[in-house]
Length: 624
Ligand code: FAD
Image (cartoon, rainbow, N blue to C red):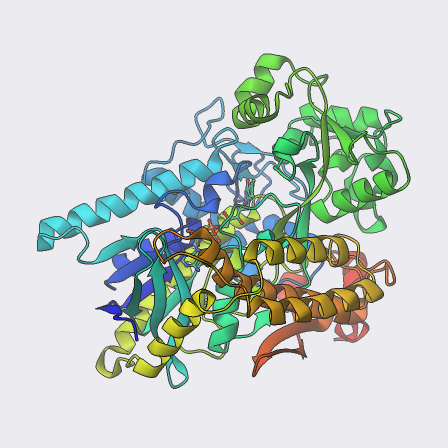
């Protein structure tokens, strides 16, 4: 068997996006020797793509904003399926996490009187997103990276070694979480460049690997989003929660092909951009659901006045939560009122002067000018839904972010489930990963300290099995991993996409089962030194497992809610409000089970009007 290098750490963080870096900083600051592993270069995680901002009720742009209003918006956005304690902690702690970033050197855009500026976003009652133009994620990662370097410099001063207490293993992929009995004992992975295997032994492992978008054909997600963390947890024995909820962002570019799927940030609408169909009609006024009627403008005049005077006008319907806008666009296109390439028009060019667009949306302007020769200051964009975010994820305890059922395993960021319920509001991911990144780092460090006397032991047989599994693509033939990946993407996009039907999902499950059999024969040539075909062959296991969880849960939930729309069950069913769907592995098979959600605490329910609760809560909850 291969020789596998081993190192010992207290906490291993898998993922160096916002969640992973924030977790690593916290764990190191609490005294844990911490290793971070990431597939891409340090500083290149998917988080750098985040554009619009970080949602936090700092009340800089509207003094009426409070954590309670943010909590309410988040619960409404998630259609009350959110793990409410997470939504509460998130709303309470997000402002401190933003201010903390500023003390670490983040340069946010400012208000005229010098405070951190906050912008409007869909589903948020007040302007709430702290931002850096449309490059917020880049600044967030730059700041966290800088903080890590600062900590390493402190460690050098104390120990003579920069990496003695905090080390980043970049361009490395983890393929297995190792266990000693029930509890975590470390991770197995490989260096992408050399193909060398390694084991990091640790009592606590934080999974912060992001999302699953690369299982879909049209997506805004980066290449890293192959659902690795979801699969790693599943294989380690931790359940996944509510995987049916996948967010399709309403405004991905549909044309030209060079930018298909790439995101047009919601700030374009927050700053005044409007959606029109091929008749030139601002169609979103036709799609305001009853639950949101009181909060959104009925006429174009009122909607336009809101940009200048939000206290006396209702917001434009272009700023409804993402699931509502995505479904509306889908309907317009289906009914023949779409743009020439199957989207609708998003126009900012007639609404703002060119220099304002360039100043407020610099990345949007440059990206589309350079990649697609589309000048957003002069013409409308053609946009449509693109797979963007997964609300489902590893089932975690709310306060500690500990993964359920596997002591020593933690999860934060997009890979964790619960926080966003059935639909995430824009801006709530960056705040989520700061709040729960910190919490996982803190609890993982404490757990590791508590395990010091009885450190788990890595089992050689598991290491050998992981190495054998990773080498299998070199000894099998018959299937091409790239072709399988394309088939998977087509299946998920077409059969488990934005609008779902029973027959199609059954067909998808059958195809996924066939693809799983074929993936076992996905072979590669050459050797282990930087071999992208081999990497993909290994990623296929994860994408197929996670896709099956999405399809099974989507078939089971016979209602439409947030990021799960059933054509055969078009309405939201209050009886389903109390139901979580859990996916676990039984042998090789994905097994689905139901659990009843924890009752929402009365003081939090009291933040809502009774008439509103009637629309969401199950009958028996209302009696309670
Ligand atoms: P990531 O930042 O994706 O980090 C995942 C890390 O895990 C990476 O380092 C990756 O290399 C590593 N990894 C993955 N698998 C493995 C493995 N097997 N082994 C080792 N390492 C692994 N949200 C907002 O709140 N506001 C916004 O304005 C916003 N804008 C967005 C714009 C775009 C275009 C997109 C696509 C998303 C946007 N989002 C936004 C969503 C948000 O960016 C993501 O949800 C968030 O960045 C996820 O962060 P994360 O830390 O969970 O994961």
